[in-house]
Structure formats: C-alpha cells, structure tokens
Length: 461
Image (tube, rainbow, N blue to C red):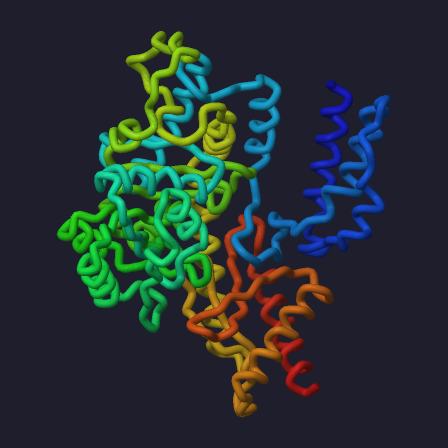
C-alpha cells in the first residue's frame, strides 16, 4: 500500500506540474473507449502498479481538466493539495460521518467548518446545516424544508429567475412541484430577477389556488455571475410568508472578501443558502453545503428514530448530522476544507478569490476596448460574457451565432484554453468563468486574443 500510494502521489504531482503546457480538454469517442475499456472483469488480478498506470494513462486524462489555468468553461475548480490528501485519509480511515456515535471527531470538524461558513455569510448562531455531495443535493434538502414549513400544501409552486440553474428546477420537481408550477420569472437588462414580474406571478398563482412555497435567488447566476436583488427579495418573501432560498453554489464564497461581501449584501436574510466548496473554495469534488437560518427547520423534517439506530441515543444531546438531510451514510467531506484552511490560512483564500474577480474585471475592460469582441454581460464576481461581433461588420444575428459557434469550436480543438457558451435572452454568448487560483492575466489575455483571431477568420470565411 505504501509503494502504491507513493507511486500515485508521483503521478499526481507530475500531472500538476505539466498541466499548464497541456490542453485544458481531452477526450475520446465512445467507440474508441469501448475498445480500450469495455471488457469482462478479470477472474485473476493483476499487479496493482500495472492497474494504476492504466488508470493514469488511459482513463484519467480523458476529461475536461477543470484545474487547468486556462479552463474557463462551466464553473471550473482547482483543488488544494491538502484537500486531495484529506480525501485519501478520509477514505483510508473509512469514516461514515452520519451520527455522533459513529463519528464524533468528524462530526465536530463538520460543525466547525459550518460555523466558519455561517460567520462568513452573516448567519445567526441559530442556523445550521450539513455538507452535501453538491449544490443539487443541497437544493433538494432546502426545498423539502420549505415545503414542510408551508404545511406540505397540495398544489405547491416555486419561483426562480430565467437565469437560474437547472438544479433548482430538478430539486423542485423532486419535492413534488409539478413542472407547470415551477415559474421562470423574467429578468431585467442586467439579468437580475424582475421583482414586478415575481409579484405578478405569485399573485396570479395564488388566485388559481396554488400555494407558493419557495422563491430561489441567484447569488452568482451560472451564466453571468449576476446577483439577484437579495434585499428586495427578502423583504418580499417576508411580507408574503414565502421561503427564500439563495443559490450561492458558485458565488457564495466571494463573501470572504470585502468586495464580495458587499456584493452579496442581503444574503444573510435568506431562509436557506446553498454553497459549493468544490468551486470557489478550491476543494476536490464532491462537497456542497446547505445552511438554514433556523436549524430546527431541517431537523423537524429529516430526524427519524429507527430501531436499527437506537444505539445512537449515546450522543443524543449532540448533533447527529444525518438528521439534517437525505443521506445516512456520508463521507467525511469536512476534512478537506479543514485541512486546506488550516494549512494555508484565510489570507491565502481571500487573495485567491479576489484574484478571480480582478481578472474578470480586467477581461471586461479588455473586451470593451476590443474592436472584435462585444460585451454581452458585464463582469460579475468571476464571470464575463461576450461574443465576436467586429465593429463595422454589420452581421445579421444568424451569421453572428454561426461565427461564434465556429470560434467556440476552434478554441475547443485548436487552442489550449477551454470555454463554454450560454444563451442570454436568446443571444448566443461566449462565457468565461475565471476562478482558478493558478490562472494569470496572460492566460486570460491570450485566450481573448485567440477568440479575436478565430473570430476574424470566421468572419472572413
């Protein structure tokens, strides 16, 4: 085991060192990977190092390299090395972080980490929550709590902006909201939820006999990084007695910086907040988080006593985290966060998060000066959206979409960088999410220059 672990660590370190010189994406078609990997399980085993080498050479490289300094697609993630080691330790100790009886030390570490998050976001001491597999699971737990807080109505409805992540739609459906009762509220010119449209939608649904159970705010929308009007939404939801859930999966950890805390002002008034430490807190997958302003609202829903768990009465006056969400068996997710922050300190994390926002702001300024690129949504947190639209070209919308799709494809196949696209009120947009802590301005600038170059080629063709 020592020999294999040492070899695995060598492979990992070599990969990290060589990453900047490689492409941010690699992959293979299904047929090619089937020829390589689709086979019956062996009756007899092979040497462990041989198996390790095949995994490193044939399987792990076939991915989007989300920790690459030029990976700007979707929401990338660059984990800390103490976080990687922590996952190894948690697996080696075979921790099930379910109850105080089974895992008292890990439970306390998770409570400590949750208290850090609580303080960063300005939540009261009455709040509580748990670490989850990701923002999707956090949303499901939150919407269950919202449904029960509303008395489990027969015809529930949920509201979110037209920029909200599909995870919120999925969560609403899982807790029993019919698809036609999940309202996508229109957004304004800055892609923020329109409060007048929200009020109108709720009033119309109540007139139809529906019971609004939750409104979902974006604290860093997945397409643009936009932050919804959190204070206005909190005022409205309090007046209308509706649960306010804030999706801060991507943007929430900006709160550790002065600029981010100001931008997220009002988030502390939400009934629940979803976060993803495996995004802008630089942790390995999987670790999400749900915080609820009143911790009892979770335990009232998820705490069940069963005979097979009756021995957990030892520690019954202690928090049993499985009483706060849908999972019973749970990995020790908190260790990687705890080890990372203990190793580097908060100042390093603040600098890393601030750097992402600063690079996005510089990209915004570059695009505004460009004669080829057009800004479609101003930089918000670490995101910026644009398209190729050369000055004076006078291109029709259909032609613009074709040109920008060609630029995306050229970057995908011919450049080291990886970006993704989105649709903004029906307009095809190229999107950069700049949050990796190793990304430099040169990485961003050269990617923008490649977009300009590929764009001019596509227009000329």
